Length: 186
Image 1: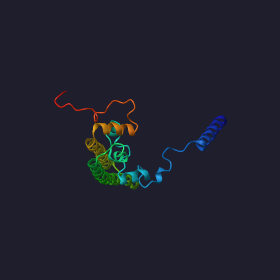
Image 2: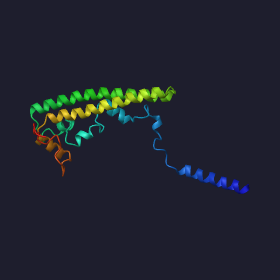
Image 3: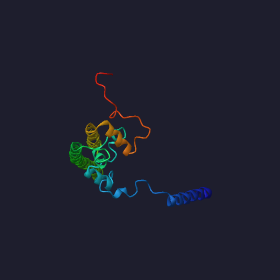
Image 4: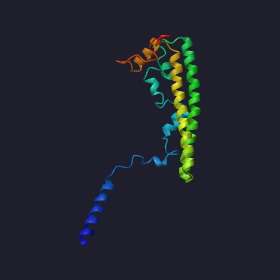
């Protein structure tokens, strides 16, 4: 029995030493967030209509976004009409993205509150996560749809210049957005 007690004591000391030197859990500190699943930066970005990488599928495949097109307006030789249309597109997009972002925040807040208050149950969980998923999808669609609309405002040479200015063009294939369209051919 004394050997067993000695072994248990050694294990306890080893465990205590390990716990004292162990790295904190990756979520340590996040329990203090107002909405546990969103950082303060996430909330700010959503309320400001920021891209947050939601349009990478478009951006990195040759479909420019209006904010960066306006950043490079001179290098892209935008016409006055293109500048006006791009500015209008950006403003309309930001307004829509801010509304969608605020709705997503509200849904995340409701989910967080349900867990915090212990009012969560399987049906409520399903409803809340379904709502969050739909709102995330609508927000992402808004960002991607804006890239489609912006691409339609540009000429193929401007899209190619945009890709080069953004650092995407080196050694890449022309994107579907810059390839000539041959109507009536398959």
